[in-house]
Image (tube, rainbow over all chains, first blue to last red):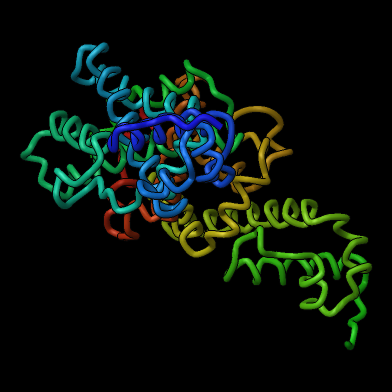
Length: 191
Length: 191
């Protein structure tokens, strides 16, 4: 087997990219470090230097997925022109990301726990969650008070998360128009 | 081993009751037909007559859980006096049921697929879902049109389902007051 040479950071990035690719066609439980090393073209030993065990790999994949989701939502919000339309577009993007990347989406919410959307240090949270919080903050008046803003953020998150889970679990079919009319509600942010 | 005698229907009911009990302390994947037979006090052969394989057992447990959830929600709605307060109480009950029965809740949405909350023959759906639909129908004016009522029902379901999943996955902590303020929203049913 020809083994490739990577600079330190590059191997980590290549492994995460290939791992993300592999998760398009299988569940996280079926992804192994040895197989990933083979796919990336390095020895298992080289890969272990970056990810001491499978758990470390899956956690890194989960956090990278959260960043990708955040970017995907942000772009959708910008394309829709921000404001309430942008907020709705971000919600629809959340559901779309889940439907297009089911294994990554499930992994994200199994592994990237304690990213704490609702409180704590905003710098420590993933950009997906940070983007959601900032948008909710921008759309809810500060005079509403922290408790109500927190409830509004969680209401919006729960709504799109529930939609995504119901679709992934086969409870409802993916129907773009229905999703739009569920998400586009003037009232999600009101109390 | 002393084996118990059951009338035909009674063994099935006893097995489902014991299976439900066992799922309070473990995941559905860790539940076996042989062990269940032992717990119920019958031979594996006797149990196989009711559930030819594990999948049949899990599906039956899932449907029974959906009935239990429906009854739990219905009672909560009645205690709150029906109407909007009752609807909110049903939403909170949905989350509470998930938190108190995580393995059953997950199983329900893995196995009882196609219970089809939103359309189709109302008689064929589980009572949990039927109760939700009837309540939503009662709270949304018929003049709203079928599409908007469907979106309202799905909005309400997604909201509490998302909340439940985020709590079960450790993304947010169980906080009764927060859940109440997320669910108690005049606006969940509006479009």
